[in-house]
Length: 360
Image (cartoon, rainbow, N blue to C red; front, side, top):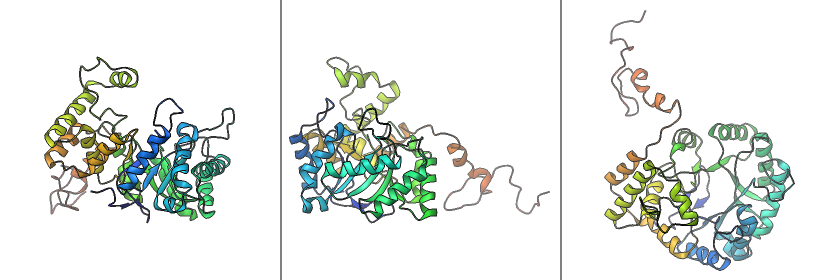
């Protein structure tokens, strides 16, 4: 699938690329990331190949990530219109001020205006709540976001890193009050982190939400640069990464590397391709500090894994989900009485009486 084969995000008409360019690495203010020049080169390459979806946040590199996007794209009206720019509120940008963070109305309005200024644009295509603020009533957050949509400052809204039950509450409130609904969620998801399959996957199907997963390479652990017994020569972030990997994670990494060798691809391409093929996923967020990293990651769209390879990865990484996920899955035995419903069947549980016999 080419980068310019666009998909609609959730139950909306917003067309986005099948891979989203994450801008958390734009700027070097926090000691890591890309220079302004490198960041602009990455954006240019992504756009040349048809990419149109960039994700940032007010807190990334103290706002410098947004400013880099604004200086390079936002201040050029024709270029800005071609791009879908997403950013986030929640991160506190002013030490000592309790109202300069979170999802209260005061901060949302201020943070939005500041992001618009840095991005040098009149509107934000997709405005994410970066995390759930449990000190703020969700109806205050949703009403404030609806007001920003009415004011023309944002086009669509989404939630990142928020529990499924709170997301459901927000969506139902929006429906009840005719406020702007959510169209997408931004959640961590990869071969090493699949627990959102328990609550979030059924929820997004029910509400028609898209998912743009972050860290599909699990902070680089699935990139192929971490291997068993390979501590020698590792330092800094790589050494820290090695210390976080257990035997179960290495089993996954070994399988990804083995399949990459079979397919003539890189480990990163295999891990990204698997995420892209999950039907609940819309547009995984990829980060790239260099053009080489970007080019390598984008090639995951051209990769074709066999059914056996996909199943191998799926079985190896199957998560343990919270109750009642498994209970519901296996309830077919005493739900359907041995009949076939929507293609699903199971032998009747012994509590089901034989045909022709009446219950007491």
